[in-house]
Image 1 (tube, rainbow, N blue to C red):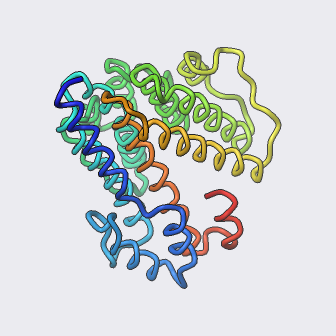
Image 2 (cartoon, helix red, strand yellow):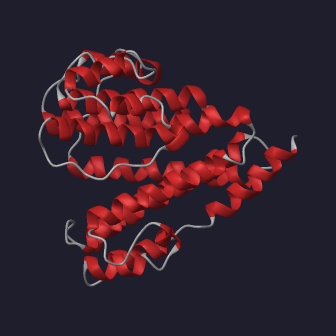
Length: 287
């Protein structure tokens, strides 16, 4: 084992403790208002990015930015051979940025952007585009590939599925997670959009679920349950990997997965505090 991997593993395990946790997230969800919840969140480790005066949108973005910050921190600790794995994982934030840029190009309100730094791939070129057609051309000539459509929804789905396939290829530990996530994304599309998945998205999903995958019959409640099961499985697998004795990329990936689970719970808690979910029972069911 190398000294760098040992140091990175120690750092990753320390960062994994910077979580609110399930109990803490439930306390946020039980807050009397979103303002109370955000104020409380600013007193947790997320206070690096969250401010007590943030709106729910700003607070949720800051929670994501906190996870990205940890990815960038760990990128400075792992050996050079580990950086591509972290860059693949961080590409989720590039996907989010591209979503916002597409919205802006369509003349719609767009949200804040994530600061990717050296973990950006196509973003420095994409952000300079002035039309969706130009954006698509930049994607086509990058590692993302061509979504084969200027439609906002197709680009949105394609990038998420392409990201999942990229992460699974770069980080074997995540392959079951990325397969399950892809199935969730496509099942949600079938359920709520009421039409088939674009061919480019199906092809991007092939490495994970094959060309002939079909969604199971489901409803919104079942889908929420599937999402809960997904995050629970990620959390359990990540805890197991983090407790292992290996000094390689696995503990670092596991720590980031735990931080991602925590961020998902916290964002759900903020939505519950804001009244976007019916009550705490629904929060408990999905988080």
